[in-house]
Length: 57
Image 1 (cartoon, rainbow, N blue to C red):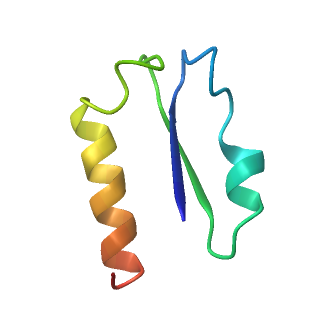
Image 2 (cartoon, rainbow, N blue to C red):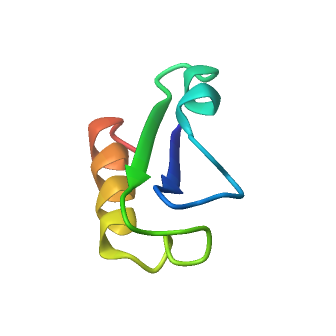
């Protein structure tokens, strides 16, 4: 499971603890983005696709 949050996200906060609770959990922080601007950022898409490729999903 990949957990993605913006580095400036005051709502979600640091995704590391949540990701650590899952087998193969991975935390990704998109620096310079907040709660509303993380998902439209290309780095979000890249992180998701990289994770899916590594997990062969």
